[in-house]
Figure 1 (cartoon, rainbow, N blue to C red):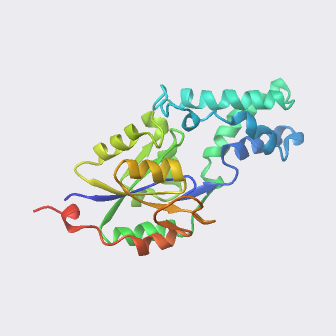
Figure 2 (tube, one colour; figure 1 turned 90 degrees about the vertical axis):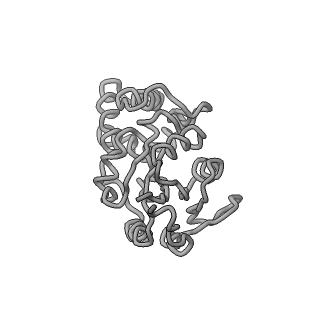
Figure 3 (cartoon, rainbow, N blue to C red; figure 1 turned 135 degrees about the vertical axis):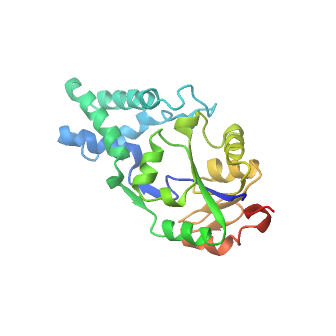
Length: 241
């Protein structure tokens, strides 16, 4: 059997966390200092460029090392808290809590159509993989949110050391799926998911709840529409005699 794969982005496509990491940092901060309630807009500028996918090289040296991966982000968060006047003796507790809050499945919301859409496409012969620019703990979060039984592979930039839309990352994914074939890339980011997928030779669908904007090609506003756009998996990819 040779699988035909749909590759899915995770954050912003299959699931979302309100406020992303900045929101988690704000919540952790306000738990110890009420003055930090509503501080996300003050904290966010200090986190700009802190995540590996913000870097021009789209690569980092701490693949599959959660402590080193998070150290870069937490150092930026530390500076944000100091600049905004947090007491020094509270900061380390806040940083530890921000990481825990961000990764807590209770703070994440699955797209209401996600599991049904994955299942519908599975019934048409497709297999699924996730490819996300995310912290190394992504596989645990994916499992906790109920996606594990629908997804064969999880490719996480924090574990691989490359970020979308780096061609080397897509090449790694296609090689890892072999002898299966990656056919589609679906995501909400026009550059990372759509441009990156096309450059890798994949068909793409842009999930754009507010409209595609300047993005070209196939686009949907709701995840469930994807099942109407992708046909039955090609027979020559699903099985070989």
